[in-house]
Length: 186
Image 1: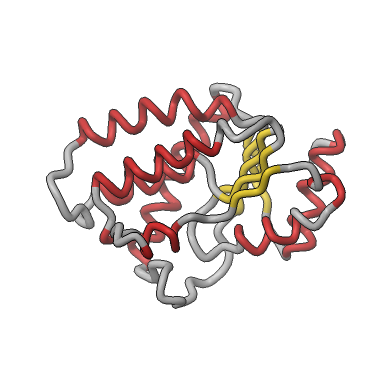
Image 2: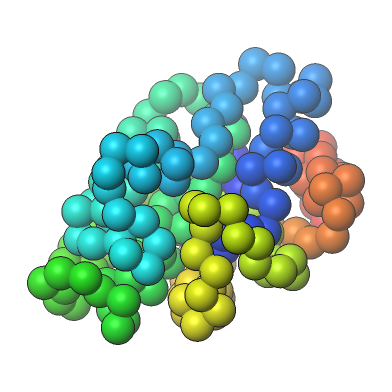
């Protein structure tokens, strides 16, 4: 199965992935965690400083991850990629020559990729933004990202994409995920 954990920054996705990969049911899965720190270390601007190049790089990475194998557990998905693309390129945060056409081109790629996930678990926003030198703590940016997630999720679910919204503690999130994957469909 191709499983992704999606959601806005600072909501515990990486912590959740790290806990999930310890479970027996994921022992044969290829696991990929967030690549935001890698982008930053390579000098690619992220968060509110993101550019068209940033967003293209992100979407290309999501595309590449989808082709690593059949059993994948991914920190983020193309859903994240396009929510952040919209928040960066269609806003006051845009740092370069941003246009709707560029965002539309990346959304076209997203529309092809989104159906390749067997299920996306969306971590509902409920945790405070924490400064760690990587994540954006700009509440306006966070709210824009969440707004785009909400819009995209409604459309994706309507088109048949399996998106399961989860919340609560790490343990509660794990329970919801394992129940869903074991066929108990929460």
